[in-house]
Length: 384
Image (tube, rainbow, N blue to C red):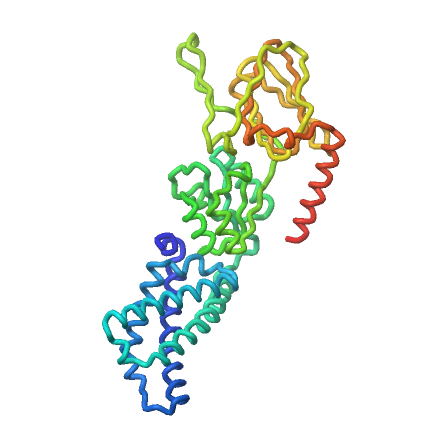
């Protein structure tokens, strides 16, 4: 509830007030219906004290069980299910209170049943109407608003890329938090729960993942976006040359320290590490592509050319010639490694365990795979 109040205080409170008004209205309607149906001398005054119990219990259920979680972005089916849970919990708690205090005989059970039934109908209908009204009145952006999830290494690049494509980045969620409130006037969230609350209550349209492997999308965020009908777009680049952190020693004889940090420099889970040594100059290796495997290549000693081929454009060559330079490779790139210097060492950090079925070793199969993938991507974009 803390995040709901932080990112949508007035909107959240408006739903609580709306729920209480619905409950009062439901009781008024139910008591009148009961009098008309049974032709009984039954006034609303007799029923008024139990309404107080119902209001207190309703507020308790809302706060204790967080039944308004993501209410602003809940889809219709989810809204019906959550509203039913809310009404059922309230009814059970009221029955428990009345049974425990032995006050049940003082009130009309039929009126209570009717009141909760009418309350459920009003709850679903008014929630949907109020959400529509809030979205209509408070959302004025011409371009889509988004949350960007990335690492601090790709932060500025991700913001620039999305801004150029006409996306208004409202929030940033870093894989490794920087403990800052904002960056370039864009608010930052520190956890998955904050991210989902921000998406909901600030009515963001999309979530973009930049520079990260799909495995790094937090489960909670992925599940919450699915429930809210928010699309997660992975903004792919095929490869990226990285400057690895290197700290030279004041005394040259002690050399320099180069290092990599998980969730900052390495945007995927490391499941495999291997290195190639004792090589001769002009050695050619590779000649394959990966379907799922992300890799970070670096050469701590020597000089190695990495020839990259995406199957459609001109081949690119990246030279790794020092410990301060890395090459991040996303899946779907054909690569060839050429040793330019004898004894050069190639180190590889991989996101997947070794699986021969995950490799594409035939170039014609690679072209067919890329063609099929492009067709699927275009079909997905056209649906959106």
